[in-house]
Image (cartoon, rainbow, N blue to C red; front, top):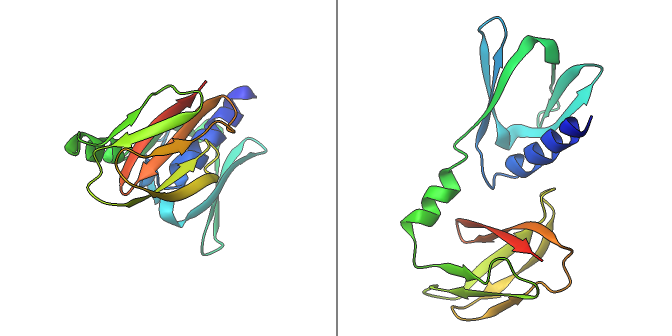
Length: 155
């Protein structure tokens, strides 16, 4: 039961297009299906099946017993962007109250999301400025700055 909710939380984060672009479902009969996450509205478990609902209101259900593996493609896309721009630094991480951003060349928009994909904070920041996260609960958050993605731990 707990695994089901962990999976849904992970899919929610992925489907917000922060980390992945598509989901590949391998079936036990060696078939495989790839679905674009940008058109996916909801994934849920219902009566022993994974139910996919798309933005065109179409619905597809697959019995869990027929699924051998679920893969998320291009997960490292945002990580590779981060590695191509090592000048941008977010610290301290973990933090208890503030995040400092260095290495930005100009004023840049940022957003902070929880692991459900809900945007909690948004704004503009220049290099060397601080983001106050003291009101956040302890946990893991996702910080996006332009096309870069950072995992932030709040203590």
